[in-house]
Amino acid sequence: MTKKHEEYLNSPYKMNGIVERMYTTKTDETLTVDPDTGQYYTMKKVSQNKKLLHDSFVYTKLFQDSVPVLMGLSHSSLRIILYAMSVVRPLNESVMLHAPDVCVVCGIAEKTFHNNIIELLDKRILSRKLGSSIEFWFDPNLFFNGNRVRVTDVRLSSLKTT
Image (cartoon, rainbow, N blue to C red; front, top):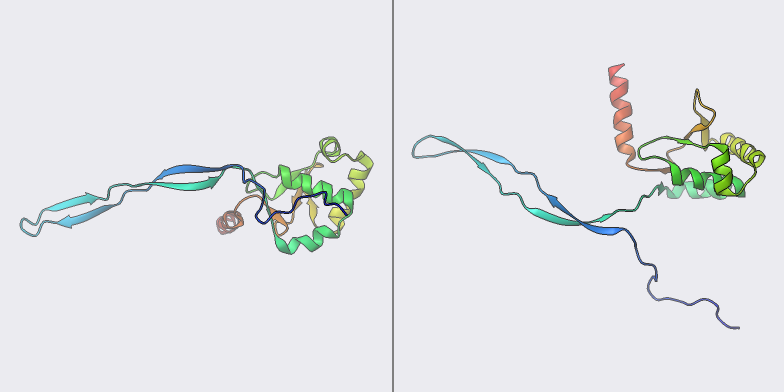
């Protein structure tokens, strides 16, 4: 038996999009008193530049607990969810799924698209967004683009003002 694929001790994949960014730390002022004269002075800390690595590629989080749910989807439903993951905007809980666009990218017929949207709705992975035939809420416990804490903070603050 001949090997068709190489084996690697370390990952052969290069991480693209990792760049170094320069940050300037904020300065703080401290109020001090001259013990001899009693005069007040402010002292500023000198800012320091800091270099950090930053991932410049766009990504969406896929939560590990969602893998069994996604594995139970039909082939076309899984393709639609992968499409949704690739187009969801940062910090949004809804996604636009325009049938002609999704069908072209996923290589499925429009009837297949509509049948699989029903499967995703039945499994509560998607929910229809009121007032739109192409926009859907998705379960942010399956995947999310950004920090869910920021969205939760916005939700809480809007509840307090109502």
